[in-house]
Image (cartoon, rainbow over all chains, first blue to last red; front, side, top):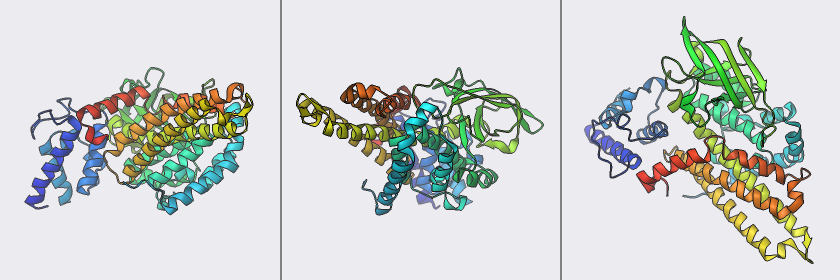
Amino acid sequence: MDTTTQAGARTIIREFLRKRVGQDIQFNDAEDIFAAGLVNSLFALELVVFLEQSFDITVENEDLNLQNFSTVENLEAFILKKKDK
Amino acid sequence: MNLELTATQQALRKEFRSFVDTELLPYANAYDKEGYIPLELIQQLGEQGYLGATLPVEYGGRGMDQLSYGLLNEEIGRACSSTRSLITVHTSLTAETILRWGTKGQKEHWLPLLARGLKLAAFGLSEPDAGSDTAGIKTSYTEQNGSYELNGVKKWITFAQIADLYVIVARGEQGITAFLVERNTPGLTIKPMEGILGTRASMIAEIHLKHCVVPAENILGRKGWGLPQIVNTALDNGRYSVACGSLGIARACLEDSIQYARTRQQYGQLLKDHQLTKQKITNMVTEVKAATLLCRNAGFLRDKKDPDSIIQTSLAKYHASRIANTVAADAVQLHGALGCHDSLSIQRYFRDARVMEIIEGSTEIQQILIADHSIAGLDTIL
């Protein structure tokens, strides 16, 4: 993944999260969306399906670590790591 | 979005309808009265590939798309919600969840057996004190030298009476975790339950686990991720099956009502010519059509692996299970005394419909999920 698509990944992640938490809710790329209580019980599953569909990756059991999914920055890093494999 | 059925889907629907009309519908009332479905029927479902409908061919499944699987659930649900509930717990809740999150070993061992119905599976989540509040489960696990000891009671478990494999969701030091537990595991006992209002042949039971030890390789999914990973995946799969099954109940009520209205005379004319009957039929058909579109939409999005498929499945389940109740109530009313008697299927549909609003996430749970999504933004809903 080159830098252009890296930037694209962050935009796509932000757009997805905005749709799920609400356009009027403010959060930054380093903010833990789970700890902030911004998402409901279905969100983790929706997030996995979103990541797999949007970035053509497969989320495995060992990837399920809250750290990977907690912020926009961490999600971007997770995708880059999966793409590098 | 094109929700028209493809030629393959139309052919499958014809196949399902033919099977249901000859092998299931004539016997469904008897199953309901007797409180079980016979092993011969389960064998037939396995031979037809209906117990592994969506599993890949490499595992012995039929490799159907989700939309076709929805049609299967609708057609089976049109005749017998108890049989449909077997498909829900065996295929949707368990086999599809093992396919998604199971280890290579779990998939290679279990999926070929489940796909042909050589082994049956059930999903052990609910407990005496934990229904909708899944986080309230008390069944526990403790790690012992690399194995796990399970203790507790599961209740209301569909087809637990005859299942060979149970997914057991338990809490422990490392968080809520799911385990694959075989029926013959020492310490596991089954207590059949009777007296359920609807889906009376769904062979529900309690699962008692007392010092029940399973190896670490029986953990399904990631340790501590039992709820967000395994339960949510299973319930999402199950909701689609129940949505389409509920649609089947409503469709059966509509078809039977039209048939009855064509032949029943009252006040010197056929029921179908009474204006109030026309109103009932119109309301029923509109609800059935709306539920059909919501179920097809959910199937279409599930086949695309669209993240919106999850809330759209919830929406389909919410609407289809509710209209199954209103349409069944209208059908009972239209049939009069006959609708209240067990010589017809209508009373069974009426009772079965009630259960649909409770299983796989109650109506109230769906309302919370759908409202939360809607308030965040209507884009994912409309």
